[in-house]
Image (tube, rainbow, N blue to C red):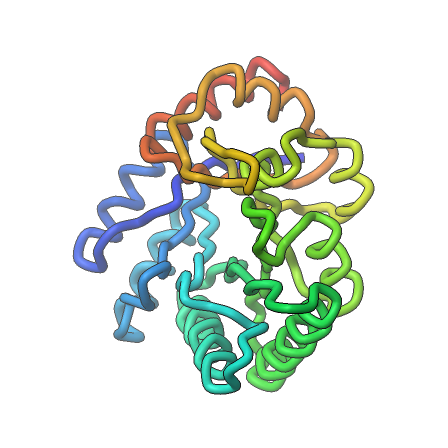
Amino acid sequence: MSIKFGPAGLGSVKTAERVLEEYYSRGFRACEIAFTYGVYIKKEEDAKKIGKKAKELGISLSIHAPYYINLNSEEASKIEASKKRILDCCRVGEILGAKRVIFHPGYYGKNREKAYENIKREIQDILAVIKKEKWKIKLAPETMGKVNVFGSIDEISRLVKETDCSFCIDFAHILAREKIVDYEKVRKLFLHKEWHIHFSGIIYGEKGEKKHKTTEKREWEELLNNLPKDKKLIIINESPTMIDDSLEGIYLSEKFNF
């Protein structure tokens, strides 16, 4: 078993290597590069340098794809644009040596079951390109926090089983969506030996997620008390204070014998 903590952000290309060294000195062994507003690492040489530094330091990289993705759009052009954004992340991620591209799959539209089949089909298309290119990077749809957005734990688990894609379990999103986290259910749905996790404090209402907040000690303790100890875990913190929160996660993990 191993557990790695890190923040959801690396910053600019110019400072990336220095930031990775700083992360390492703080005890972080994971980092998610936020391409949420676009793939900002443009040059192959930059991606190679950043990836080499991360590998030297033993920091596991992942990528968060742009927010502007909807694999269930009624407009074919928007679906194709969404797939291109994901594949652009995969292409750069492969050079970086990143393990996964995390993404928000889309919206339900008018028919939930049809939404599932549409999103499944597009994921299979993306996976076919990844296979053709012989990339090692994995595709990881994320559990989502709003009730009107595709991405319940059941839907993500079903996608994993039916497409052999990877996954991202966002426990804050599960709480916002379900109003409670059924850890036993999550364990049964995701039997895999490695989990990629997002976590933070979260403010939510009847319709689910409103915004992320600083992770409280009790929230960390509840998560760590319920996580399986027989898996490889990567925990990415997405709070507004993700550096301090990740540090607290590392500190508290020792209390729970990780």
